[in-house]
Structure formats: C-alpha cells, structure tokens
Amino acid sequence: MNGGAHRHKLAIEAVGRTFAAVRGGTPTVALEPVTLRVEDNDFITILGPSGCGKSTLLRIVAGLDTPTSGRVLLDGTPVVAPGADRGMVFQSYTLFPWLTVHENICFGLREKNMPQNEQQRIAAHYIARVGLGGFERHYPKMLSGGMQQRTAIARALANDPKILLLDEPFGALDNQTRALMQELLLGIWEAEKKTVLFVTHDIEEAIFMAGRVIVMSARPGRIKVEVAVDLPHPRHYTVKTTPEFSALKARLTEEIRIEALKVAATA
Image (cartoon, rainbow, N blue to C red; front, side, top):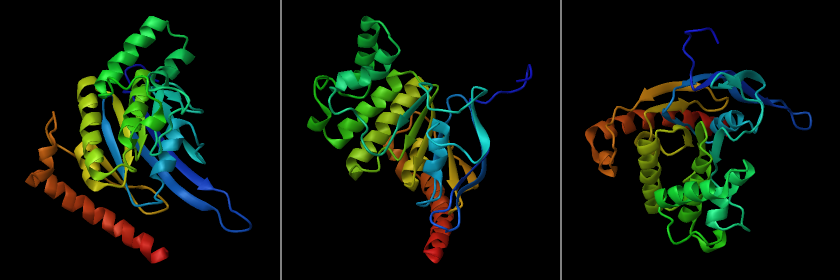
C-alpha cells in the first residue's frame, strides 16, 4: 500500500459470486459486486432475506469460497484460503465431539504448537469469559445448544483472530438463550474490541449487536443500504425498548419487507 494511505482492516472490493449452471440450466448470480470497508474494532451486522448471498459473502471472507470477481483484503493481504487470522462461528455447532470443552478451545493453540502453560492460561481466560467454569471436562453432547455455541465462540476467540466471522450463530437457539448470547458476545466485544462481521436475518439482533447494519437486497445480493447504529455502549438489553431502537427497527423492517416481497414474487 502507498505510504500514508489509509488501510482498512478488511476491504471487500467488488466481490461477486456466480454459481455454475446445473444440468443445462442458467448460472445463478448469488452476489452482485459488493464493496465494503471494515475498520479495526468495527462490529458490523449483515442483514437480509433468506438466499440473499450474505452467507456466501461471509464464506468468501473466510476463504471457504472463491469470488467470481473482485477480491478480499485483510490488513492489505489478499484472502485466498482459510486461515487462523479469521475466526469463524457457524449456526450449526461445529465442535469436535471427541474433545472436551477445554480441548476444543485449545485446538487452534495446539495447532500453533503453543506452550502448554500458555494454552492453559488462554483457555481459562475464555472459559471464564463465556461462563463455562465447571464444564471444562464436558463433551459437546453433554451440553445445551447455548453452551455448545459459547464453546465455539471461546474457541474462535482463543486463537486471537484479526476478525471474527459469525454466520447466524444464534439461529438455532430459543429466544431466551439467544438474547443472553447476544449480550454475552456484545460484552466480550466491548471488553476486547475485536473486529466482527456478523450475519443474521433477525432485525432486532442486527440493531442490538452492531455499530453499522448492512442491508442486502434479494438475490442477486448487493448492498442496498448501510445504517449507523448510534446507541451507547455498554449496551444493555433494555435499549431494545427505547424510541431510538424502535425507529431503527421500523426503518429496517421496511427495507427487509421490500426485499422479502421480491423474493416471494419470484418463488
């Protein structure tokens, strides 16, 4: 990069994705060229109707999929494959079933050949941070969905990634657990100021978690609008009942409804 030029933490530059035709059909344009700049310590939520390409975009940033056009830069370096500099948390619980909570959290640290005492220190920090003290020796099948997802978040954070990528991480949880997990993750972000890209189709979740909400259009996905969330931190769940929150929710509900109607019209 040029000396003195501003370098973004994450630069998504005109990233498009078209999936090849199946059995003589037409190719599917999942993403029209998307350009997005993410700064250090940003918490950005990507909101959109089902099938709008938001998960495809996140997978490209993760290096799990390759764009048809454009490129992704993390700290100025092109993303071409998965890497430890990006921590990924999926909706499904992707823990290793044969490892305990503690062993799951230490997995990436072992891969880096980190000294044992350092692994223990980092694992203990994140086990405490996500409220899993006393469950270190439990296997995933012994845990509730919320606890499995806490373990997955702790595992991603323990690796100290440059950016945390979350694909509807609370989508499979009941409403009460989901609300508690939102507060937990937001509290960790407020304390540790990670850079976060968080995909969701839940409007309240998108507002509560984010500093900026990116609304995507119906397929082919593109960025339709970007909305700043100027709600103060630390953010308490009671903010959800304020007039400011309600105004943001009304605006985003309208934006998403328009896109959902487009999807319904083509179904």
